[in-house]
Image 1 (cartoon, rainbow, N blue to C red):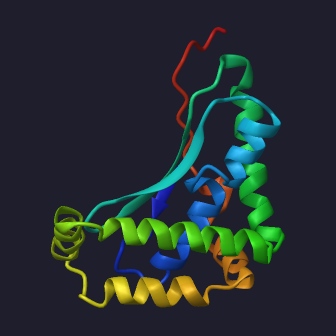
Image 2: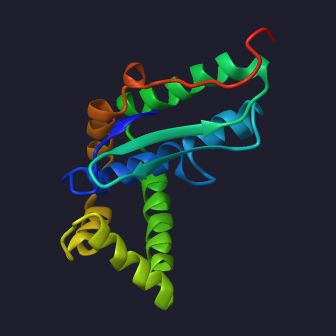
Length: 168
């Protein structure tokens, strides 16, 4: 993972789409490659852990020792692919639809609604935060995704933490 922009950063919303494409839902690049194609793991994902003044991009999985290095190689491959290849219109629309559904779920019911507005308060965000998210989500292009990947998603900038038996 790596240090990431906080929720008040102008690129935060667009980057949430990028992170979802990479590994934020079942149809993501990491799941398709490392789970479905290679069979290295049952699950892999990327997400952003947001704190008040900083955030962290985290990519997480569990693999057998024999798959650690191949998995790291494939994670790097998928990050670089987002830097060099445009996301297809179909993939981008699928992710946008998925994120819109998640957004609606975040406001479904009084407790979810209260939690969403508590986050506004906790992170000192403007009340237009969610409106801005929807505008970005609707207008984001594949070219912008590639530009963001080039700017923020460099595998060489990431920290790698592996837990397990070193001698195996």
